[in-house]
Image (cartoon, rainbow, N blue to C red):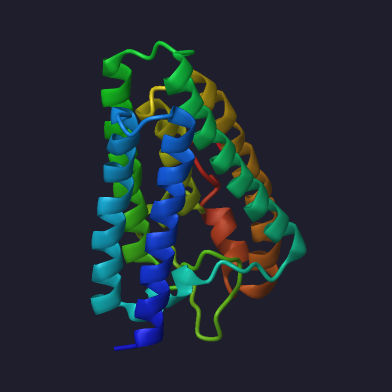
Length: 223
């Protein structure tokens, strides 16, 4: 077992959890923020289970997922903007709860929670299908084109899953204002995809032909 990967994964998980708690509950001004705890459960329980499974079944993929440093400056900027968006959205949701700005019905929270779980499920399916799927843009020496599973329908199913997650997230937190902030996330992904596809067309064998076979990037029959 690669103990450096284990240590890095545990530190990443713990630090992300602590930051999420602070960003949610400090602005809310209370720990009695039910929607905040709901989100933490929906997000971190599956994350812990998936991390353990990857550690046992595919530690190389886990190691790849832990690397977040983008080689290309443009993609690094997009990643940082995404981080700013998440921080702003979580803080706003906490403030929204404290001051009661939104009146999101419980059924919307329930439906959004189901959508969040569905996005997570798609995310896991994509990870299982593509063993080369890192968090940064690059091509491994032995990497091959993946065109099976969800990749038969869209070229970037992981981004589809992430958009579902980030659109559902603020509604799990019962905040319309935070929802408006997170609506900028799909725009960042569209911009990221344009840069990623230029890279893959140039670096990954067969990707140009794959783009001709699979026309849609994120949503079948739409884009």
